[in-house]
Length: 93
Image 1 (spheres, rainbow, N blue to C red):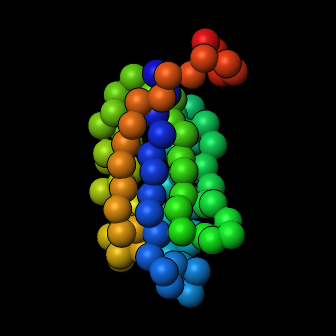
Image 2 (tube, rainbow, N blue to C red):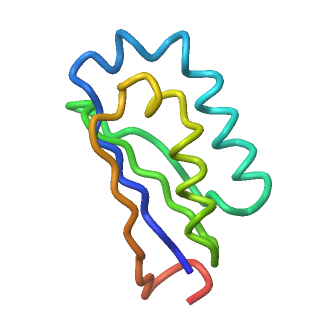
């Protein structure tokens, strides 16, 4: 099953992310290597949101990621939401 993790980012996200970025990205890389993250990245113009696409049968994998994510822990993420995604084209539909 696919899920979308939607992050809303703080206005000063770009200024504050540098000391946290490598740890944040390493968590994502680890989940990608395990096959749980399909793709991830921030939206641009304006950089106010980020989207992570997961493929997992266990939503707790995503919840655990959010709890461990330094962007969440340090307030760079102001709101987040996990939603199931019904893929109809692409992936392994």
